[in-house]
View 1 (cartoon, rainbow, N blue to C red):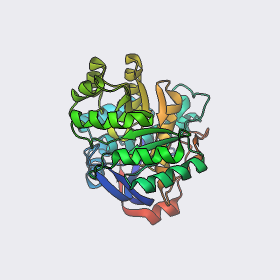
View 2 (view 1 turned 90 degrees about the vertical axis):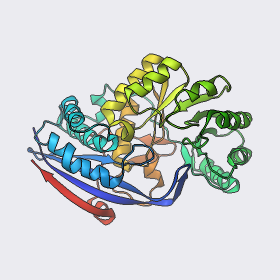
View 3 (view 1 turned 60 degrees about the vertical axis):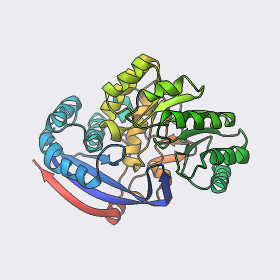
Length: 370
């Protein structure tokens, strides 16, 4: 079996409401859906969701890397040879994790369809329990967040993830308002997305938040300040998670040596797909860290890929692939029963792609053939 044709479809996926984080506000999410076709008629789907602030890529740049570097390197290969596919991609260009993730995910989808097995089975089998999803909350006014938290409880969510790091100085009031509105019915975790900047500021913020019973604090400082996590660790008792600071195995090794975090947030889009994140999760497990699979607000395609990985790897204890529940419309059909995610047992990713919706959301499309 060989890959004979690739189709790159660039989308703008509409959100139900703006998504506000420390570094940007999104009204739609740019997505690149990759379709790989084989000589025996199978079709595999992958997805790239680049972010200049996290993956160092733009949508236009990811398209060009796929068209001119990655796809020419892997066309004609057997998609089941995923290690060899990554070796070809890495030889063609350094980094570019989200572009490589699209190829990786499509290859896993094809491999599962050939084997007649869901992707999680190819990764070693699944845990008994379904993965859970948190209600991810934007940086909004405290009173708005309090209302949303009450609504989230009514919808069945058991965990809230609050985006913090706003420039208005209201982060403590945001958490205070949410905790007052819901009591201790729901767990709260917070993510500053580097927005608190330096360790001193982060320490002050975390100490102010500790009375509200925070599960953990994610990426409180700049991604390049790995040593800063040691300073924070020495001053606070809340669990710490690294996100933007962990892309490669070398990045994770620095945290393992320092013992400065308790958890790492892995993203397929940062690191190059399922294969890379599976290896990182094993590295984290050997070090005694637990793992979250995080979200870049992907559609059902890449979200399903992350959930298959989460089902299969014992170190992954949290999942936040929330794109499908935040979109007003998207081409996939990953199923949710809040707060659970119902990962399909069908071969491959188990996600159907609605071509009509894909066409409706399309900005541009390109084909690459062997």
